[in-house]
Each structure stands twice: as C-alpha cells, then as structure tokens.
Amino acid sequence: MSDVITYAPLLLQGLLITVLVTVLGAILTVVTAFTAGLARLSQHWWLRWPAGVFVEVFRGTSLLVQMFWFFFALPFFGFQLAPLTAAVLALGFNEGAYGAEIVRGTISSRAAGQSEACVALGMGRALRMRRVLIPQSIPAMLPPFCNVMVDLLKNTSLVSLVTVADLTFRGQMVRSTTGQTTAVFLTILVLYFVLSSLISLLMKWLERRFALDRRPKSRRDQPGPLVKAGMPV
Amino acid sequence: MIWDSEFALSILPDLLQGLWVTVQITLAGTVIAMILGLVVAVIRFSRLPVVSQLFNFYVQFVRGTPLLIQAYCAFFILPNYGLSFSPMATGIVVIGINYSAYTAEVYRSGIHDVPPGQWEAAKALNLPIGATWTRIILPQAVRSVIPLLGNYLIQMFKDSAVLSAITVFELLAHAQAIGSNNFRYLEPLTIAGLLFLLVSYPASQMVRRLERRLAPAH
Image 1 (tube, rainbow over the protein chains, first blue to last red):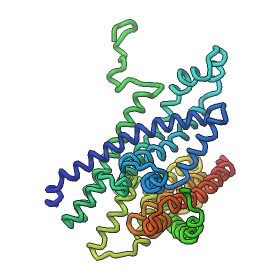
Image 2: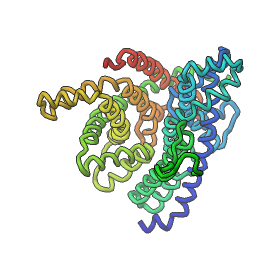
Image 3: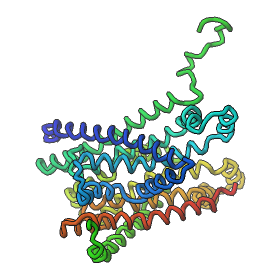
Image 4: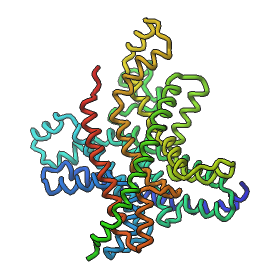
C-alpha cells in the first residue's frame, strides 16, 4: 500500500485526465444528443434520415470498436487524430446517440395539448420547440441522462486503450512498476466509484433544481399553522 | 483506392470466428447475469437485515465502476492468490457479474409492478413464501421485464469487446490482430463494426416487437 502512496501524484494526474475526458465527453454528448434527437423529430426527411443512421450506427456497435476506428482507421483517410481527440469523439458520439433517443423520446411524449395550444397561439415550430416542448421535457430527461453520464464516466476507462494517460492508464503503469496489483486496482476501483457517485449526486441535484413541481426544501420553510394569511413569510 | 475489397474478403472468415466467440461470451454471460440478478433481486426485496443492505451496496458498487477495471481486477489480482482461470472464463464471469447488477434492477422493477393483491391473495391462500415467489410473483414479474432483459443482452454483446483488453480473443481482438499484422486497420475495424451492427440492430428490432407483444396483461 505504501508504494501506492508514493505513486499517488501519478494516479492523481491520471484522475485529472479522467475528469477532463469526462467533462469534454459530457459536453459533446449533450450537443450530439440534442442535435441528433431534434433532427430525428424534424419534418424534413433529409434531416431525419441521416440522424437516424447516425444514432443506429453508434448505438448498434461497440464503443471500443468506434474508439479504435477513430484512432487506427481514420488515418487511412488522411485524418490523424490525437489520442485524446479520438477518445472524446468516440465517447461523445456514442453516448450522444443514446442521449438522442432520450431527447427524442421525452419530447415526443409531451402531451399533445401542449403542441395544439402552441398552434392555436400561432407559434412556429422552432418557437414551440424552444419555448414550450424542450423546457417541459428537461425534467423528464434528467434521470435517463444521469445514467448516460455515469456510463460516460465508466467508459472513459477505455481511453487508456488508445494511449490516453487517464486513471486506468496510470494505474497500469504504477502496477507494472511496483507490482502492487491488488492495492493499485482496488484504489482505482474505489476512485471510479467515488466519481460516479459524485455524478449521481450532481444529477440528483439538477433533478431537484429543474423539477416542475419544486417544493420548499424542508418542512421548516413552509408556512406553519401560526402564520396568518397576508403575513410576510 | 483506400478500401481494399480483396483484403476485406480474405479476413472475413477470421472475423466471423471472432464474432462466434463474442456470441458465446454473450450467451454464457447472459445465463450468469439472469440467474445471479434474480437471486440478488429477490434477496434485496426480502428485506433481510444486513444481507439486503449488503446486496444493495453490491448493486451500487458494480454499477458505479467500469467493466474494464473489474475485468483487470479479476484478471490480474486473482492469480496472485492462486486462482488462475483462462481469460475467456474470467471474462464471462466478470461480464456476467457486471450485468447481474443491472438485471437485478430490472427484476426489481418487475417485482415492484406485480399488484399487491397478488401478494395478499397468496397470503390468504396460505401459500408458503417459496411457492409465492416461484408460482405467483416471479412468473408475472419476469414476463413483463423480458424486453428490458433483452436490451441488456444486446448491450452485453457490445460491451464484450472490452474483454479484448484482458486477452480474450473475441471479435475486436481478431480485428486488432489482423490490423497490426497487416498494417491495415481500416478494413478489419470497419468489418468488425458492421458485424456488431449486423447482429445488434435486428436483435433490437426483435426486442421492440417483443415489447409490444408482452405488454403487461393486467
């Protein structure tokens, strides 16, 4: 175990890269999810169709295959991506494809009356989407997006296989230098668990923040029976 | 021409062999995940003191850590304690355990959706607890979650590529080996991706149809 403490700075560096990859991946995931998800809801086939192919291809194949493809196969077309770029692209597109289905599913399951009311008020499609349907859908999107984000974090461990020096990569290095296999891997396992628990907590906070029926934080904040109507609370 | 069709055709049999290994891993892993997940779900639902909490933590921990690290742990740590298995066996057990945490949640939702009247009727008829589970609750609970389990089966099929990192020679490992031997990664990796898609896309369409057919009767 003492060896692990000696090499802690190295693991910490890896941890920072893991966090960096997760944050970049999360940004790309959200952008991809909304772009592809909204394109699948479009009335134009030339938007719907490519978005559908994109989503099915990225959902239908293995993330690791996609990452290797971006890293090893894309150079044959003349694009040499940096390992970090390839890794983030694969992660963001893959999780984004899952996210796109969430976006599409939640928006298309809004009550029909909402759309009808917008039409009655003379709102255009874009305005209706931006001001009514998307804001209403966000609370319903958050729980499944929590799963996607936790998955994203866990999948960042795969970037070590395309030579990005993340936590897993550093862990392998420390393992082969010290031979402390058990201590190193259990440390990493716990670190990932802590990170994914943090993401879950963050998403739970967002869920409360965006809940449609936001309630006061605790009973204390509610006006008690002693408070008369009209009294400042 | 970037794409070499002749080369692509020549490596296809090798890749199909890899696909077969991937399918085997998936099927064996599924059996473990389905059975272990059911056991975990029933224990969690039974509210046994300590044991249920332990399994709650098990589900959270397994779901909160990456499959790759779990595989590394099993592959690199166990041999230090005299437990040496083939990469394939290790991989199957690891992916089975990994997915048991997910199937446990799926079963839980299924068990949760069985109307309380079923429990009460079983109690009123004086059915022993074992029979209540096996004859009343589980048949209804499992039926309604079969499509969800199917989705996890497909997910496992795709995730099994991760096991190439612990030298399991499945589809992706085949593609990588061909790539590094011939210095051509485009064809093997593209075909590997297409093979994954070729299996998982029709499978997910089938699950979708199953979903419509098995919509809860009650």
